[in-house]
Image 1 (cartoon, helix red, strand yellow):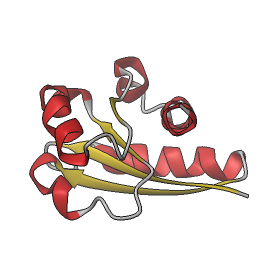
Image 2: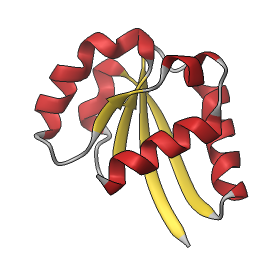
Image 3: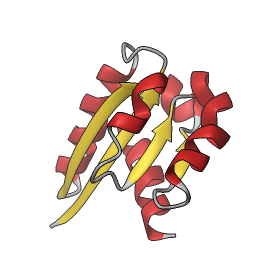
Image 4: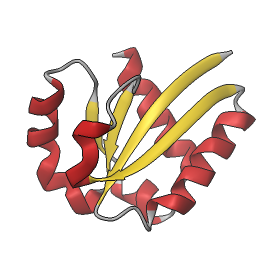
Length: 103
């Protein structure tokens, strides 16, 4: 069974809770063990351990360079596709995360 640990980064963690459920459900549907942790942007550095990928909510995309510098290319970092985020499309967000890990 595949496994992926995702860190979702947002402003306060409110809007991502529903997205977490949808991503984890997509993982179950695809037989992928999916662990998703949502944290506010100011708390990222304390939650990097064992993360495979970091996805930023569109509202914090301006922090992408800063977070990439923080992880020094050891963990892939990307902004969640805006349409996937807006529609809470967990399957599309999971596929985005998986594609970043494969690169």
